[in-house]
Image (cartoon, rainbow, N blue to C red; front, side):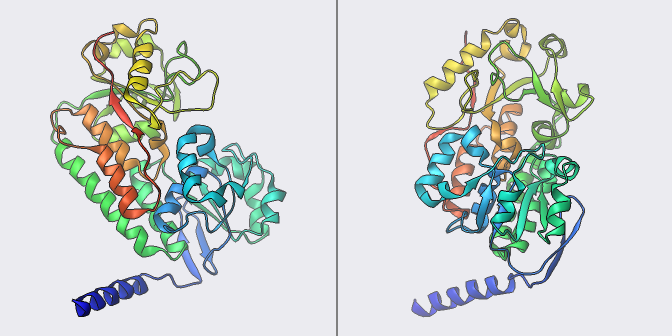
Length: 375
């Protein structure tokens, strides 16, 4: 028994050694730019704080260990997840939280003062960071900026981004473990949806209720939620109607198109106007049902054929731009193709990701649901 364990330990060590990164490292990121990383980064700035959950896949013992500055978007969009992260890694609250939006708003001096050796940014922020001169200033200081992407091309670039970060941070083995799992789960969805005809038509109202129940209906075209709907083989209303990446579609227009399923995304936003379905940790089924029922009372909503037929669903908003978006895809597959995915359990997949590939504690909550029947 001892010899078997020794051999297993040797094999694991050898595997990790084989996957180790050699520096200097030259790679091409999701922006198509070629970067040379001179040595293993130890002091990282993160433009979108939700990417701490990507680092959790790689620096599993402590995803904050390299962080010197970030934009803590979780604090604004999902306070319960932020509380869980703090409970495990209390020193995280001491990391400087900067104004660091997609619009390029940033206190660059405070970043530079932290002496970073790498910035990790979402690809969608590149135009603004470029226009405001942030990229030029960082380049002049020899601070590389690695662009990753989990929103613009969610299915193509999420595994690619995790692989890129794994290479950059000398965590290739950890990255491959997760991307193998990711691809297996995605392929199992494709195997069941590729032959379904006609393709279901779906409308997803992103951030439904964030600005109160009177506002409707913001959605995504080929990016984010729209890209994920298309990734499971369905037709996305936003892709067919919007001239740009995101925008509003009138409820009357959605009603006239008679989508097979109407899906909303919600979260526990720290906003006084928030009337969204509060998906996430620390949420109970009665809370979710009550928010769904309030959503149904919006003027004209009852005229939606999908609502009449019980095809009204909701999902945790942050999955649209998330390294664990495979869970969001599974929820979409289950909602859009109820006959094909009766046995699929996305919540179990989420739990498995946390337990197998991270040390993030798992909270209790609801990440996706079907609206209750009736009014």
